[in-house]
Figure 1 (cartoon, rainbow, N blue to C red):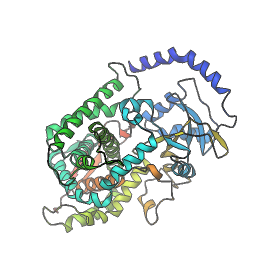
Figure 2: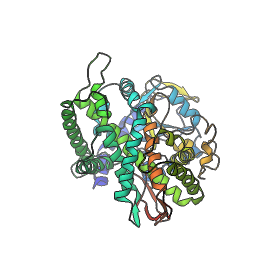
Figure 3: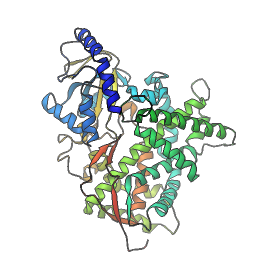
Figure 4: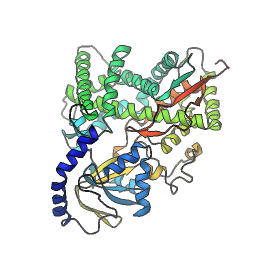
Length: 474
């Protein structure tokens, strides 16, 4: 149904688009990057979405870098003329020129799901959000949540993994990451409340990578309704929290309620709700994808699993009965984190991000017109043999010593817009790995399971595995 509606809209606008394209093409500079814009309005969107949904978004990129240029090419995605910039030097250029030559840009689909992205300038909004979150998400502040994350992980494995012969990893990882997010961000612990939010949130998440047609019955329409429902629920939680005495910020909500802007004004309830909703989307979905990939590769590579097991069991055996993980334990998980990084290199939890040219400028000798979109993809360096020799090989030793060269490993972005939740992600991933590996070894039930993208890499059947509990006791 959605494809039928989508193609109907395309046909309806095709004549107008062709006319506009003809008129505008005469005004474009001659030395544009190599490539093609494809059909009017459609561009190459369908081919891009097709490769992404099949789990190989890098194919769209590498096919064109091979044909046109290894560093950039032009195309048209989501009805926007877009330049894909590829490689470490391109990453450095974009990250270094945020708020100068380029600014963050969101596709219309995300603007409809998250209208607050248009309330203020991207530059101002980014600085404001980074300032708000920096104190809460810095390592020193997050240390106090390690015990809590470990406690949640222990309950999660007790309820959903132990005494079971088979489990499906992706939905369980999603349940764990949402549980942690509800606790850290909102101090929600009631299982029924969390389940209600999780179900609505899943509807929203399914619309992030859907065809942006807002007609009743479509995935996108359901996602918009779900986003509105979550906002209403968050407003209720915020109003209730305001009536409670909380002298020190124990979670993100309390922290945001105490924050003031440069004029000493507290943030509005709707603004706080929008920020928390955005963080839930950014953290919950990407972390679930990363954790699932780690479990997948550890099943495929027993020699790497054994090294992680050795590191984690040494930590587990050093703990007294009932003693929870602490910061010193996290610091000892060096090889485990290398494995997690390698999983995020081979299967980035995010495809990439958009920028918009805020001025005409020249990059690598080619003209980038003001208003054109630029897209940087993690795949352009993560799976590039010039950045990582034998890129298809899973090798955690790449991250030993000084690690990869600058601007080649970018799962959290870079520059002024680097993801502020990087340390939060590291702690949650390592706590999950510790609790999983000290309990089980596992085999994949579908050895050749395909990967799809929705919106991050996801096993098509959710990664079902057979659990093999360890015989030893801790």
